[in-house]
Structures are given as C-alpha cells and as structure tokens.
Image (cartoon, rainbow, N blue to C red; front, top):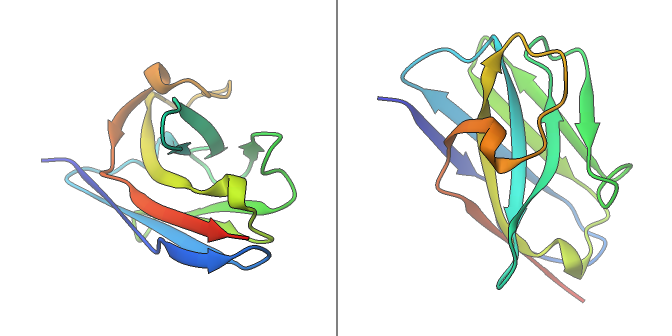
Length: 127
C-alpha cells in the first residue's frame, strides 16, 4: 500500500521559515519526479515545486522562486521543501505527490500529472 506522509507544517510569522518533509512507503519512487502543491481556503490546489527523479534539477512556481527549495533523498524515500522568507499568502495546506511518468524529461505542474498524494500539512503565516 503506497503512502505519502507530510510533516513539518505549523504556524510562523511573516519572514520566518519552515521545512516540510514527505516520507513515502509501499514502493520506491526513485524513478518518479516528486512535487509539492498547496491549496489555500476557497482556492484550487496549485503547483509549488518539483524535483526530477534524479534529484539533479528542480522547477518552481514564480510565486516561490528564490524563497523555497525542494530536495530529495532517494535512499531515505523522502522529499523536503525548505520554505524561507514566508509570506501570509503562503498560508495553505501543502501536499506532496509522485508523478505518473517514470524517468520524465518534461516538468509536470498539473494535478492530473501526479498519481499518489499525501494527506497534506497546514502552513499558516501571520503578518
């Protein structure tokens, strides 16, 4: 049974930092890109960041570029999202997900491109 479990969410003041972690189990995803998405209240779930299956390249939404860093450890089956200089508009439930395609060569930024999802972790940034 495949499971993705996010952790590390919480409340922080604007300008602060949080580090989210996603642990996968049930099968290995070392050949799949991994992504982070977020969903604010009343909004759709949006792409935040993705990392190539090899870990050698990353891709970010414009809104988080330069502030967030995605990383992965295939030996530990984890993917992290370091979030710095947080803003109130970063407040959302954050989800990690695995891409449908193995050994992908183009970036997946749509929900439909991802197969397995975690349950989400809440991030709240106060001004």
